[in-house]
Every structure is written in C-alpha cells, then in structure tokens.
Image 1 (cartoon, rainbow, N blue to C red):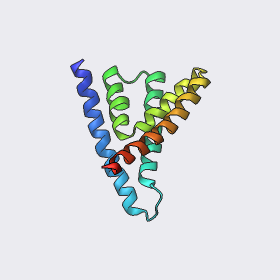
Image 2 (cartoon, helix red, strand yellow; image 1 turned 45 degrees about the horizontal axis):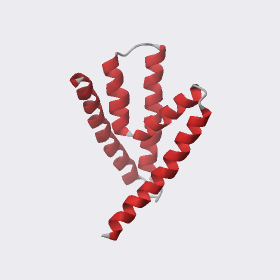
Image 3 (spheres, rainbow, N blue to C red; image 1 turned 60 degrees about the horizontal axis):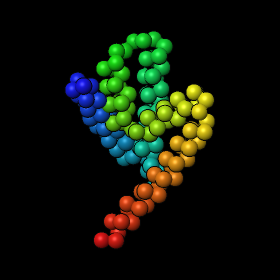
Length: 125
C-alpha cells in the first residue's frame, strides 16, 4: 500500500508542476480574457488519460504501478478534469446513461453552487 501511495504522490506532484508551468506559459503568451491556459491543460489531460487507458487495455504495456503513476497520479495532478471525463466515458461505454447524466449535471451544478457558497462565506467575514 505504501508503494502505491508513493507512486500516486510522485505522479501527482509531477502533474501539478507540469500543469502550473504549461498553464502559466500559455496564459503569458496569449493576450485575452479567456482562460486558455487552463482550457488547454484540461484538454491535454483528457487526451493523455484516454491515451494511457487505451494503452493499458489494448497493449497491456504498463504494470499496475505505472498505471497508477500516470493516471491517478500524473493526470490527476495535471487536471482532475481528465478523470471526470474518463469516468463519464466509462459510464457511457457501459450504457449507464442515467448515471452519466446525473454525474455530469450534478457535478457542474453543485460544483458551481459550492464555489459560490465558499466564496460568499469568505465575504461574510
């Protein structure tokens, strides 16, 4: 279990660093109000997690520790949006359209409401 935690932690650390550097680089070189850096990172993260899971399922090229390092660790640290998209893909692939709709809708709605709640709470004090 400790080895698993270390693998995920190292991947997450690396993913977070790459996310910060990539997002900052993009945002500094594009002059617009659109959060392009975050958008690009999210889209690249979705591509990466799809690529990794495709490799694991089709080619069986990676062991379980490397899989955890790259998907849960790196992709999770790089962007949790990629994990969110992969979970939605799995629900659709398995024919769970009800749970796909529920998960997506509630994640966006409740997530946004919680953001507003947290922001508003701080403004009270």
